[in-house]
Amino acid sequence: MTNFNRSTLPDTVRSNGATPNPWWANAVVYQVYPRSFQDTNGDGVGDLKGITSRLDYLADLGVDVVWLSPVYRSPQDDNGYDISDYQDIDPLFGTLEDMDELLAEAHRRGLKIVMDLVVNHTSDEHAWFQASRDKDDPHADWYWWRPARPGHEPGTPGAEPNQWGSYFGGSAWEYDPKRGEYFFHQYSKKQPDLNWENPEVRKAVYKMMNWWMDRGIDGFRMDVITQVSKTVDKNGKLPGEDGCEIEDYPVGEEGYSSPFPWCSDGPRIDEFLAEMRREVFEGREGYMNVGEAPGITPARNEHVTDPKNGELDMLFLFDHVGIDQEGSKWNTVPFEVKNLRARLADQQEAVKNAGWASLFFCNHDQPRVVSRWGNDTDRESRELSAKAFGMLLHMHRGTPYIYEGEELGMTNAHFTTLEQYRDLEAVNAYRQRVEEAKCQSPESMMAALALIGRDNARTPMQWDASRYAGFTAPDAATEPWIGVNPNHVEINAAEEFDDPGSVYSFYKKLIAMRHNNATIATGEWNLVAADSEQVYAFTRTGGDDTILVIVNLTDKTARVPAEVAQLLGNGVGESQVLLSTYDAVHSVKSVARGELARWEGVVIQL
Image 1 (cartoon, rainbow, N blue to C red):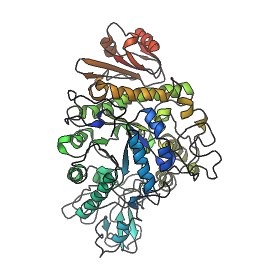
Image 2: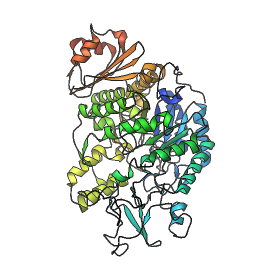
Image 3: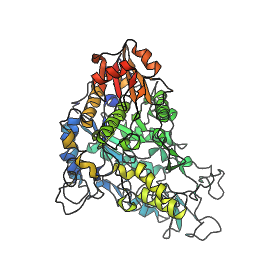
């Protein structure tokens, strides 16, 4: 594989603790949500040929890795995260031949392809699950099947094995009349959890993963992988089950207890991940793997990503994207700089000596950061705040992930009716919280959906100002599967591509800085001015080289913190400004005045 964009990190710098440094230590990953990226056949849904047609755009941006959300065969109950055949492409997206073409064309451009992998659960239409509905089948123990609670009629309310609720609403147990038992599903009832306690399940998963690696992909992003190990007592019973020695937590406001504490970072997760490493990745080169990690603390991240433990290269932690929620995801609270700084500082400090960090604000499950924590009410505010959060993220130590459209400053959808949403989580949450449990008002719930609902990230990619934003032909017979954001006439790739002051051009600079500056890629990270209400500041140090990053993450002018001013000594010259959300001249004057304009961020060579 030719690394067109990155310089090679010298062994004199340390990344995750491995020698030599892994190739991905100064790489940047770009996530594509296939159904929303590019439609080439006019059916309103993006496809593999569409991704292939846009590879030159990604190569020009400068990213190194393209992560694809699931394109496997699926009933699409959860937009492909419910897989019915791991070794085929869903016709919605194309064919295996289309996938092979995408791989070849990406590799020709020096881009690597990482596939999303969902092995905590399958679709209920997967052959494994259908076979497991027969108690006498070899697959009978491949999922979490349980009988009805003693003294209850199977299939009736209250007969569920315990009181766990699904994260997508309702009970986490679904009764199957054919088998006469319930199966467990943390997510949709069409996403039954695989039983990783069964070694035959793990063997089948590893065999499938090897099949894809042999086909030429460059690794996996593993969906909720830290939830594959469940907590059970010595008799194999889940908490809250009849006769279990482990007492479950009380039910919450929606009428259920949560499986989350018992299914996240479970007792055998390190064992399973190390086994996967041995069975799939050992002996291979040029790959990367990253796990979505619900329930993993920063301290545990160090262990899992430390190369000496042989588990995963990186993990996605979620503590920093929960700072605007209290209790329930749908109870939102205002953004505060100090809370984001505290969470990210914990993540950075945890991998100071070993392991590695994944850097992200946006993905297919998170809203657009410029709408969530920035200001998207007018063009200037949107562009400045998009640049500010981009700078903040990309100047940290770790591997940055860009979600499609983030590099354009794409905003939330600003939907106003429930009918506009397509996301199963959103629709179910509204029904359960507003209509059934009555624990949230319709107005409050709609406001929460507009702020942090997942569909905010899933509106079509905004390529140009045409009718459907260039996602599909303007005269296509079928409308896009989800509404195009009306602001695509102002916010789009065609508008920004050749504009040196655009958010897109700013992201190109961020990517190039990581590729070419070893201090930004791997240098030591140290927090500065930990008490500032507006400014997030830190240094990056590599040998004798020190870079200072200061970002005002508010819509108001901010004083330069005293600790920062002390580091700057006699001021800053234009030549020291490596990047500014305004420009070098503006930031030099700002620093001289001892203040930062709204959303002003500056990277300074000390």
